[in-house]
Amino acid sequence: MARAERLMQPLRLSLGIFGICHRRQKSEVNPAIDDPAKKTSIIVKRSTENFLRFYCVFVCTLLSLNVLRYLPSFWVGIDFIPNLTSLRIITLLFYLQNAIVSIVLFIFYDNRNHFESYVKQYIDAVEDQISKSLMLNPKSDRIRKCGARNLAIGWTYFTINASLTIFAINTNFSPVIPVLACNPFPNTSLSVRVLASFVQIISSGVSIFPVVMFCTLVSAIEFLYDDLYDVMKQTTIEQNSCRLDIFKNIRKKHLQLCKMVETVDQSLQFYVAAVFVINLGIACFTTYEMINKSVPSTDLAHISILSFWLAFAILTTLIITKKAATLHEKAHGLSKEIFNIDVNDTNIDDMIELNLLVTKLHGPSIGLSVLGIITITKEMILTLAGLFVTYFFLLLQFRI
Image: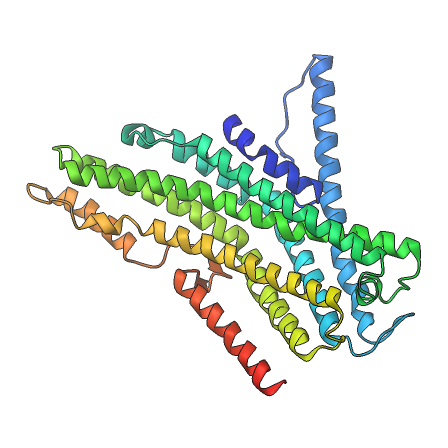
């Protein structure tokens, strides 16, 4: 448990800075403690947990109120500029996505059936007797390096995004950006710009680091599937006398990993749906704005900002889709070796075990889904790409 906590600590710290991660308080009654030092430690720990939870509630409330604050900007504003409807829709979608993500992740960490369940399942998957009998390597160092790489990329992108956003809001780099960020309040007010900059910084973190978390959680399961596939392949090649006992353990371990996938899916299916639907909307309206040019095309700053928004929406969707599709492929990866098993001299009990494994591998799709409706596979990448390209050429041809 401690090792898993250490692996997740840098990620949790990064998420906690932006109010999308907290430790759930345990409701059980602790025994009386006479040691004053331990009492003080427990009080400090509980106070910290209460503060982090309050901070998460504050961020959820702030981002939700920010959506409500922005709605009147379509019709009124002290420095209202007409003909910016598509840009306002893009901004509203971005704010809406961040509000939804903050609420989903608050539930993810607050509900014991989600994050705590995932951590417990991961520990069981790497430390139980089946893993020891199969000699599975948890590769914690590999997971740590993957998490560190994901965090480094996330912080680099956040620094660039936050710096450019603050610069655009507080300068005349693009005259449209301060209006979009501050409406319906006056963008000439220093206090309004400071508050808008703070909201944008929080929003940037809420939009970036959940992607880092998603990739890290999924990668941990992928590594376990890789280890299981290696054991399966080696056992199939060797065809030793105890292979059927090994296959029984492989089936049990595969079911264990499938439960981890199910936990992540139940926890983050709303997050995945929000990313897919809202990012697709952002990409479509950004493309519409770039083609129809409500702001003069000579405004290089405006074009640069739109290109940045478009790239972020597409890349975020692509990264999540690719990771989820890879997990789906690896969850069904054992099917590549299952038919190479020599079933000579097998009894009825062994055949039942093998049939159960075959049924699981070739049954309903194992993977992450969008609201539990559509399982994300590699084919979905082509579907989304085809949808966007079709929309792009329709806009280009008819200038809708």
